[in-house]
Amino acid sequence: MTEKQRLWAQAVQERVKFTATILKVMYQVKMLGIERTITKKKHQFRRLELDASKPFLLLIVAVNVLNAAATSIAPAATIILDTATRMNIRTEIPSPEAIFTSLSLISLLTSSVTLLYITRTKLTSGMSSFDRIQEYLLAGAERDEALCQSTEVASEPATELTTMPGIELVGVQSGSFRYGIGECQLNDLTFAMNLSEVVAITGPLGCGKSTLLKAVLGEISCVKGQVSVQAASVAYSQQRPFIFNGTIGSDIIGDAHADAIWLERVLYSCDLVMDMESLPDDLRL
Image 1 (cartoon, rainbow, N blue to C red):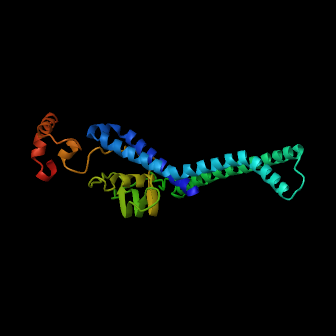
Image 2: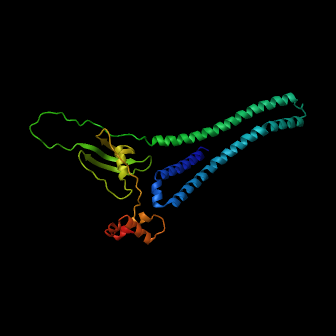
Image 3: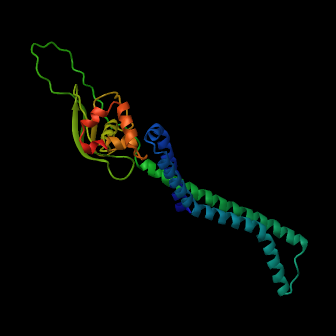
């Protein structure tokens, strides 16, 4: 029962997570015209959730039926069996006082047994939730691994100017980073960023540029290596990508019907005709 409850809760979490993610990027969804695709995906998550809930809900129904049957049938069945047994062995049939006392005792006993079954059901549900909470806690909390050190230099009179080595603001030594649990998204990174330097992180869509910045900020787990940040505060403005890793034409059209005339009108309205002509053919459409 615990495993079935855990699978159901996991399916619910995946559906809620997907819905929350879509609500955060709704304007990108409208811009790309993929409402139907998102709706189908959401219905798919809902079907998976219902399929995962069926085994657990069937067990709950079975337990409730057994509890109700025990409460309703047990007293009468006990009295009937006792009376039949006494008649077979030709002993005295129980008096109404004895029957009433027996029914009271049986009712008290069945109530306790029913409460025990209900408590066991709730306990197994709680244990499955504890397992999911344990997985979240073992994944490691978001923590700032930065080592903030003072870089103040004493003001002393000097007669000669010398070239000072660059002050290292960010340093990563053999760092491996990941989201939650599982495989690392970034492996064995070693680099340094010095004061007064302008550093550009470039690469294709989805290669890990934003993940690298989150690793420096300590927002994802550092599995191996060391990260040092010589700063008391860091400013970071995260962007949300809304373009595909494809051609310009595919980003404009999305999954809609390709209309060459409408595409030309869009390019002209956005003043992208000259830009498109300067690009190679494999990046246009």
